[in-house]
Image (cartoon, rainbow, N blue to C red; front, side, top):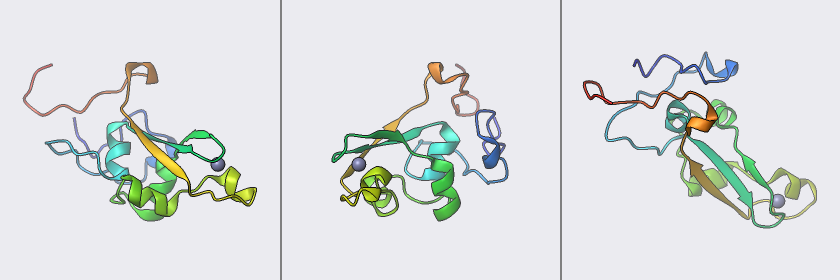
Length: 117
Ligand SMILES: [Zn+2]
């Protein structure tokens, strides 16, 4: 599988963005790598208890595919919009990385070339 060709599950606005090459050992540590491998990041607000899936495409467009996907970096660019609008501290958030599942649709898991299965 050509890692630089957009996977079919990508939204239309992603088709013009360049995905990072998937290399092994697999390290899901950038926004681009999350998108390329079908991972999602959700945010849980500890103030209002809201739980939302982040739009990684928007984050990648604003900060680049190489932007780190670990919590200390995400905390700098993601806030709870509901809390911020209500004048509360929108920065009391935590993040969860979710791998792609069969239930999300057909997600071709990137496999190392030459390896069966
Ligand atoms: Zn909130």
